[in-house]
Structure formats: C-alpha cells, structure tokens
Length: 331
Image (cartoon, rainbow, N blue to C red; front, side, top):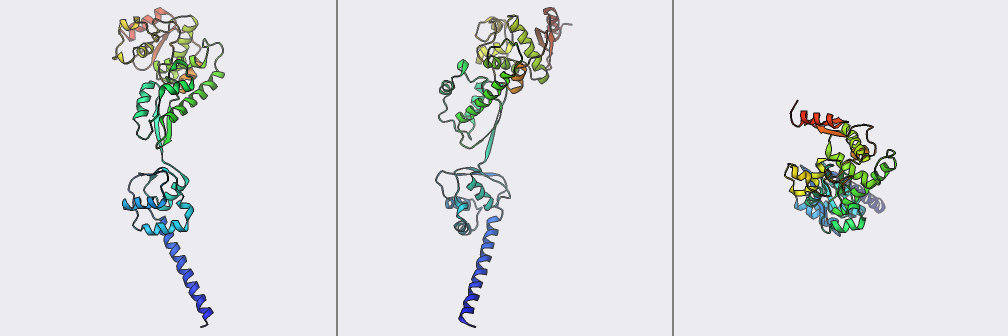
C-alpha cells in the first residue's frame, strides 16, 4: 500500500469518525430535556451560554455539559443568547431552548384588567403582580405627562387581557392600555350618533362608565344610555346610584342611605345636574358603543327587577309602580 493511499484511507476514516461524532452530538443536542412541567429560566444581561449550561447541569437537566459546549463551539450563532425570562416545557430539547434564547423569544405572561372595576382596584392588581416592575411608577407624574382630563386615570384605560414579558414596567403597561382606549374612543366619537348632548369624547367616557356600572346585560346597555341621554336633554338629574357610591369612596359599606342621597359631592347625581366630573369606573368597548349609539327610546326611568335586568318606564307613575312591584314587593 502506497503512502499516499494510506494517508487517504486515514483521512477518510477521520472524516467518517468526525461525521459520526457530529451526528451523535446533534442527536444529544436534539434530545428532550428531563423536564416534567413548565419551568422558567432567566438569562441576565451579559450572561453567556456557558453560564446557562452550568445552571442546567446544576438542575440535573444536562448530564454531559461538555457535549453541549462542543456543539456551541461548532455552532457559535446558537450561543448568541439574549437576556430575558424563558419557559422550558416538557419535550423541549437543548436545541429548542437555545433557539429560543438566541431569538429572544421570551415567555409571555398575561394580566386581565376587567371593565366595571375602579382604577384603585386595577392599581392594586398591577402593583401586586411580581412579574411586573413597579419601581418608578408615579401615578401623578403620569397624569401630568398625559395631561389627563379630570386629573385621573379612572376610565381612561382599556379593559383587556394584556400580554407582557417578565420585568415589564407597570408604567409601560398602563400607557399601552391608555393608548388603546384613546384610539378606540376617538374613532367611535367620529362615528357617533348625531345630536347627542355630549361635548367631547371625555364626556362620552363619563357616560359610558355610568352605563357600565348600571347593567351587565349587553342588550340593555343602549337602553340605559338612551334613558340618560333623554334626561340630559331635558336637564333632568341623572339620579344614578353608582355615582353616589363612587363619591362616597371607601366610606361606602354596601348600603346607600337617605342621607347619602342628600349629601352633596361632585359625583352625587341626585344633587348635581349633568355628568359627574370624571368616569366612575373602567369602561369596556360595549359601554362606549352604547353611549355613542343609544337606543331610540322615550324612557326616562328604569328600575332593577333584582335578576340583573331592568324595567324601563316613560312616566313617573309607571316608574313608581315598577318600584313598588320590584323593590318594595307591593303588587
């Protein structure tokens, strides 16, 4: 056997061995991690791939860390990981994980902000969520920055389910909700029913917040809005309990007394005429729509049937009869 042929055979053998080794490494790289349930892993800013491999070894997810290091040396782009919090799920391989780390495909968390609640309740939920960063959140500074009418965030944020990555600031999420509400409100305002006794989108938002609190039935919202629009046109007081409750603040204990109805606050619509100065709750899209497109009704009154629905009346006599039947249990 000539020397040249011998060297060729050696080179071929080394090439085959290298190919087999690479295939073995690839199989190991693509094998599922021993993870039984979803878990989170956070990559700090400036942290390198080797440090992540060490943490995986400590979790006993990586029996052969040297193998993974070799693979990353051979595939350096997969080692260019980004800071963030990522989810490791059952069935995921090292390859899947590092593709996710290199792409910055962080775990998306979610928080649902519900219509009908007050800003103080939203604020409590946002500040209590450990996945959000509440440092630096300054409500008054944000109100000033946005030049908010009413000097309040009440009603000015869109209820929805918001997705975010770990460490997102409360301020950023609030700004997203504000921008979403403003975009929707301004669009709907341009398409509003002609002749409404509302002077601005903000007044529409105030009315919508009252509609939001008065009924949870979708089919009743336009009727409720229609009643309030009729009363505003006639310069009648709105006389709606949710505004009284809002004006009482934390003093409200679940009952409205005669003295409460007589007590003058900026929100007591049994005493003041027109709309209160700010919304009284967070407002959903449907309540906005109802307020800008109220039902064509002659009704001026409504009373609860105590089952979530209401009886609507055009005269005070009919309304009083409905009150006796449904509130006083007098047939």
